[in-house]
Image: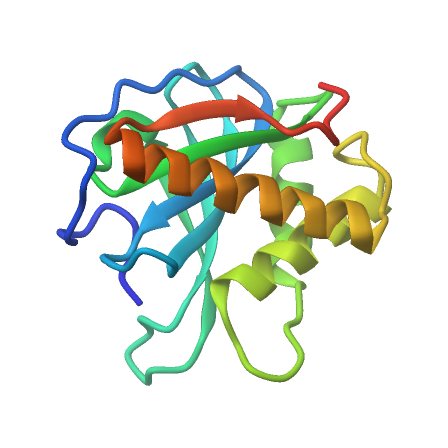
Length: 171
C-alpha cells in the first residue's frame, strides 16, 4: 500500500477540490488499479486542509498501523479520486479534536487487515459515539462504502476528482 501523497500511477491530473470546514469525509485514492483503492478518513479544518486518518502497512515492520497526516491538503494529491462527506463535527477546538484522534487510534480490525476495513470500523465507532450525526448501522455504513467506491470509479472515468455528499449524511 502507498501512503497518500506518494507518487503513484494516476489518471487524475490535477485536484482542485474544496471541502467544508469541520466536515468529515471518506477519501478514496487511486492505487493504479481499476478496482483497488486506498481509503482514509479526513477531518477538514478549512476548505482544503485538515487531518487525514488512515490505516497502512507502510510501517518499518510491514505491519498495519494507524497514522494521521497533519496538515493534509486535499489539493496536493494527484491520486485522490473522491471526498465523500459523511458528517460534520460540532466542535473543532483542539481538545475535542484530540478526543476524536485518540478514539480513532483505538479502532481494531479483525481478520485480514485493510485500510477499507479500518475505515468502516472507524466510521462505526464515531457514529456510535455520536460524533457524525449518522446512525451506527452497519448496513448504512456499508452503503457509504458503496457510494464512495462508485464516486471513485466515476472520478477515474471522468479523469476529474469529486467532492460529494453521502445520502446517509445529515451534514
